[in-house]
Length: 242
Image (cartoon, rainbow, N blue to C red; front, side):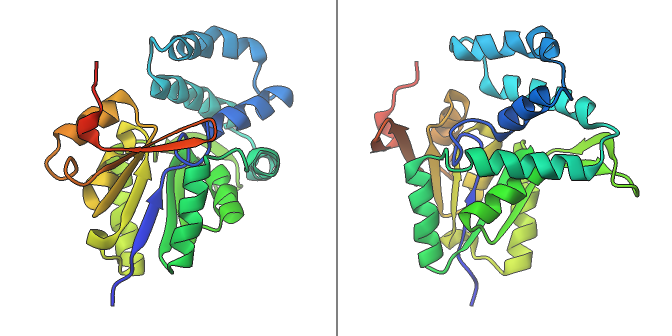
């Protein structure tokens, strides 16, 4: 008998912002990244997103670029230490709906898995905290001396998330037609195409447009919006995209 799985994105789906933002702040505080560099290279993307004139993914990718450069040559133990501190301090800053769905899936005996674009060290700690059975995150490559090389194998795009699900299907003998996927951006679109129960949580315009036009998702996707202490469950055909 095959297993039912629930695949969760983290950034913007479980965690209320981006985990890489939190590790970025820690690196600035530890003087590993110069604060001025954030103002020079990231501030413009952040301001555009903050004013709803730009894309949040552009902001996160810009930070990921700086993160790659910042950790190059660092020992793995430094990032492991910082990742643990970030999750200990911020790991409960999650959406109520998603937290409750994780618990529901665990109670049902489903395989609960996170596939996230955040650094794997952060994803690992978040997976431990919230009881996931397994995880995949963006791998920042280390050499034989456990030093970061400056290379990255991303997990924030739709292509790699598709491959990740294929990996877990083989590993856990998963029936995708009975499985669930939760995400918020276009990078999560392939996960939603592959499962029988896709759920978009506070979706971006780009993701919602894809979900409404794609034949494999538009008839079955559930839209969830969480604001303050309220959760709204919507049908895609009730949402107007301006």
